[in-house]
Length: 225
Ligand SMILES: [Zn+2]
Ligand SMILES: [Zn+2]
Image (cartoon, rainbow, N blue to C red; front, side):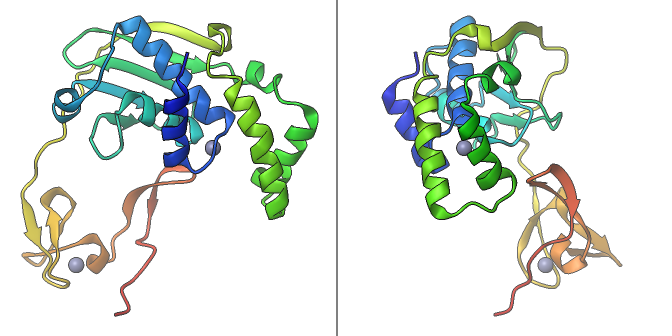
């Protein structure tokens, strides 16, 4: 069962409590139990010992980060852009891992029709008032709390074999952009007429994680002062 204190940590990160946030916590707990992982602390996070792979950038991913401590910043969270709500966990160097996929249709049956209607208005169509959002949150928090010990029947749980070794985060040399003077990781710098530039100054598109997943985008801002 996911503890109350983890739920509060998840709320702090995510800003609200919702069913998929709790599903991320619960899926992580199931994966850790199966793999016998009891703690991910200083050494494990610094050495990137445990890897968590999520397959969509939704609320679920924040629950995963809080529970597993595999995060965007510590390079132990891998975002595999397949568009599914699933988590895979393994220890580096080991062949066996666990994948936990959310059976969303089954989860949807827990949603009362009026809450579904509210969700459509506030989240899908973005035309709900602040009061609608608060009412939705109340319903979501209730639903989420009821999922802290959600039965494994709401997940497809499988054992996986690790077939590709994922490299740990490499340490790259930096180069200075000729135009803005900022340091850039060399593999991201652009060489033009023998000079290095950052992607912003070179005006080239870059890869970004945005709402729709991993996409190629133009740098969406420019410095004005
Ligand atoms: Zn959420
Ligand atoms: Zn630059």
